[in-house]
Image 1: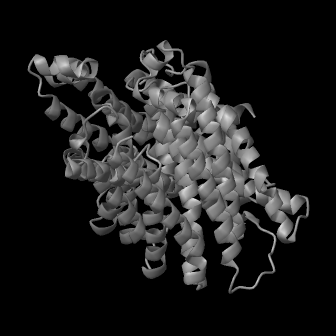
Image 2 (image 1 turned 30 degrees about the vertical axis):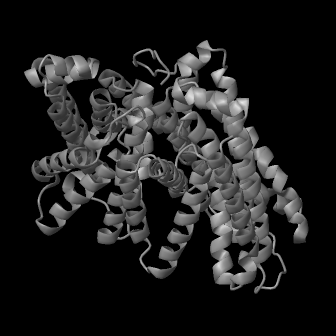
Image 3 (image 1 turned 180 degrees about the vertical axis):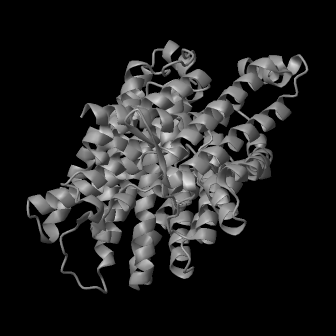
Length: 322
Length: 292
């Protein structure tokens, strides 16, 4: 390794440690529930955007149906807690169930949708998304349009957000570590080979279906857990909030803005967009404006910076150095 | 029971004709430009609002209003193509255009909410509320008129594509863009006009949709998912496939509706998934070659 390379690694490591310290210290510095609220949502979306990226960013199959996993995770918790009469802090022991639900849904979903070409895949994910939203409306065990409520947590309002913050931080950190490990692994290499040329990858002995399905299932499981955390935090879920088309678009936008396929990109995108969106919703009385802004931002990103912030600035750095 | 079934089939075919027209616009855009235009759904809703505005402020008949809304939607289509779609190049172009059109849809939806608010509206005219009694069936005039207009327009599109020089350019571009450019076809102009035509038909679809359904800016999601199901089922880029799939899906939905209105829409999407398991390229789609 060259000296420059070693310095860069050291800088990266220092940055990582700083970021981790800042993330852990955040609720102490900004102890106001209004601020920690931003933190909880941002971290939930960091988890989701990273999970989305491990499948879509690495394989090139863009999913507009991850709300299926998110909503299903939320509903799983709500329904199980209601029917098994789980109350108090014990509800958090149910979070692994969300991962199971996400994975169980992802397998048949993937088996059907991953057989077709990339753009048809996007459309099928949208169709499956609508099937789930309609099912949530129509079944009786999902509570119809009223939805499901979470068990009440008798915590003090002033510190209510903090445990959620650390749970979300744990999910986010775990997912980022997982994404990093996958990117360096043979599995990650196979995924990227599929993204670059699926036919050639097949010729070289990669089983595209197996690899894609594994990534899709993993991504779905993590998104399910994030949905579960989100549900406990929000304490309720209805069909249009659990299965929200804007959710899908936001996640894709986060990954695109930060940099599709990189590790830091979706994290950065989520940290920029989710608090921004929350801030807008809180400040602007008219909720439709945030929709217009989200769409416009998306257009700007895709048209002028299609590779995202992280790869683009990495290019600048490289140019500046040489 | 038998009567109900026949009635459902008749309804399904009539409504299916209108969906066929909207779906042909979508599939034509895909065939020529390799774009899945997610904004098609909200553009139908926009067409419905344009008709609504014309009939509310100018008291113009809905069908006469089409003389204004169709060219207006054509222009909107050309502008969308010029401003956003044209600029996208590269390997992931199809996926990118899909996201771009989704963003465009979001912006249009937001603007419609700003202007009209979330209240549901419906277009009104004498032929919306009265129906004709034929062979034991009650058929609302709007279904009949809408179906007739859709059939005429699909026929016009067919003639345009298969009997004119422009149509030949379009079909050449669908087959091979590079070769089309080499023999002197102005591919960009063909693409812009095709996008315009594909969007212009939403004015008609929107008017009939608005007269037969209560709509608000949120209706675009429902529409686009139906239209996507139809064009994928028919095989992306296949005009005949879109026609068959539209009538098939709407009839199926209308039949399930007798048994349970709540589940009719689910069956609609489930049918799409099922068909794709058996035949990934759709009813009349070209068999797929490379997976990219």
